[in-house]
Length: 600
Image (cartoon, rainbow, N blue to C red):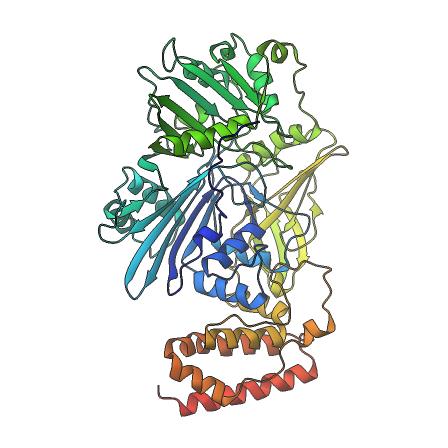
């Protein structure tokens, strides 16, 4: 049992919440895999509206969508959007925040994990950068990350960080935001001074992408100890690690038992160069260990289904000091040679680094090389075979959505690649049921879809009698989705009570109870009577005029949304009861009177 102190845990999304008086001006996320519920939780956090469970009310969610439209982007490897068994009804409108990076995973992956956020207030702007090993999912894996915050002036401890502009170039350049000046972002980041965690100095950040490999680790010279923590391994890279340092260097490798077994059984196993081999188990193993660069690569970052090792760390110790590399790169050639897009930060320090690492290694179990050598190798099961098929399919096809009014269909230029016997493909919108893809067909009709469920997120599933693998990906839609899609979708779940609660919230700037409706409710979640009635105590003329007098900007924000949502609420047949329709009419009359009395 380790007696070392662990590194301080960071509530990931809470660290990105704006401080009082600040608003998010730009938010760029990079992730290998993405859960739409986690994306929704991130939007709420960026507006300071997430609760302890990462959820929030419909009013909070509507505010987050409206405030961050055109300001936030989440960049994810194509084909790695997860489709949970219970997808929130409103998840379809999150498509606008997603940018898929179309790397063919047979050769390379979009693999960085980062959040770059700019905040603004009347005093200026500031930045936060988080990077590490965590995907934007709801997994509870053992991950490690680093949070940096910019500071104005010469506040003690603020330093420039080499390479941080390259991070901005990578994220801003891939975001697709039409009005974003990428060069200006790079200049701001490079000019900023950054606060590091106590006892740690961040010396640089390295980016690998587009064939440009990771800068070589500080592996030359004499080191007392080198520790590598990675859930995914390949033998070629481990041979390189085994050559780092000199004969007096103690080398420790921490990985999953499955990955260690595969490495031990690889040709000319590199594990004999490690003094300590430690295991933290994971339920989903890599499928192969590459003996050379041309051999099949393991899965890059499959999210385990139970908590397990997911951190990636490389630590070099000398004379009581340590250099730690932390980020997204696994101990694989694919990660370090530029085939994958990756981020690694270099930190230097003493006990602040080594004690936390000691606590992590102390939680792992020693394993003997001889036992790994003789252990039965992990055999790929039906799900792993489908996962490899999924990767090939995602890299080979380019589906598109076509619609005629409410009727949707999926089309491809050519039939999908032939599937193995017993395997079948099903597809649909993220918000609809799945339909089997006809053999040899280039078109799959999906039928009529209610306007509140329109999305360009395509849901797919490969299925056999023994297993199934599902995912979502974006597909271009022709003609484009209607401009009022978000308003229709939000109002359909909002109802009158939550809408009025949202207006109160915009006017006052305070959180207002909206009848208990949560944004992430799913199909089959029935409304309680009190939930449907919501807040029927009408806003008064005095409420509206008083809000204008207290903060004209708040009134303008509410007024910009009022008519759009009123129109959508009243236009949807059966959405509002007669009582609610009457209350909505009264509220519109009061609001119209307030506009007439207030100066332009």
